[in-house]
Length: 244
Image (cartoon, rainbow, N blue to C red; front, side):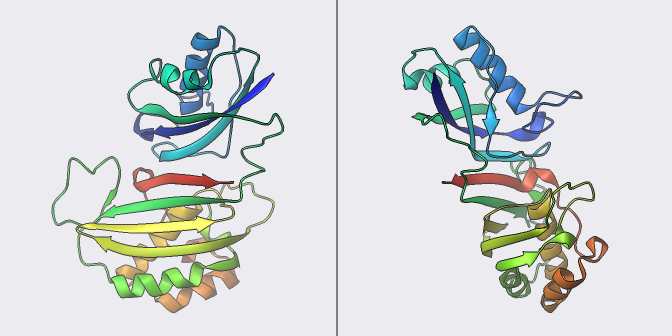
C-alpha cells in the first residue's frame, strides 16, 4: 500500500466547494472520478481542509492510498490529462502511510483579493471582490495588526460553524495595495468557517470608516458576530499554501 500526496490548484467558480456534496459538483468529486479512471478503482481523497463554493486554491493538499505501482509522475502529469482545465495537480509525492493532511498541518496561508478600481474588471471578476471608493489603507493596516496572536474569533465565523472552540492563533495578517488591488494575507495555525472572509469584510468596514481599528479587541472580547464586518464574497479568497 502506498500513500500519495497531491498539491492541487483550482478555480472554484464552477464548484460547490471542495467537499463532496449532494447538491452539486465538488472539486473532490471531480478529482476522485479522475483517479478512478487512472487506477481502475475508487479511492477516497482526504484533504487538509475544505473550501466553500466559489473559493479558489493554489495549494490544497490531499492524500489517497493505492496499491498501484505507477510512477509518482503519473499522479501529476498523467492525472492532469484527465482533469478539466480549472483543476490541476501541481505536484505529487509519496509519503508515509501515517501522513494526515489535516492533523499534520502546522499552518495555512490564505489570501483575499479586493479589486478597488473605479470601473468593473471582467478579467478579475472571478478572483476578487470589486469595491469602488477609497479605502483607508493606514486604518486597515492598523486593524490588521490586532488580529495577530491568539484570540477568541467567535465574532469572525459563520453562524453554522461547528467548531468546538473558537480560539485560534494568527501569525501574520497584512494589507497592501498593488495597483488597483488590495491584498490581504492571513497566515495562521487554524481557521473557523468563513473566518478569513469575515476578517476581510471587517477590514473593509474599517477602510470605509464604518469601524475604528481599535474596535477589533472589543470584538474579540464580546464575541458578537453582528458587530463585525460582513462575510466577504467567496471569489476573492484563495488558499495559497498548507505548511507542514
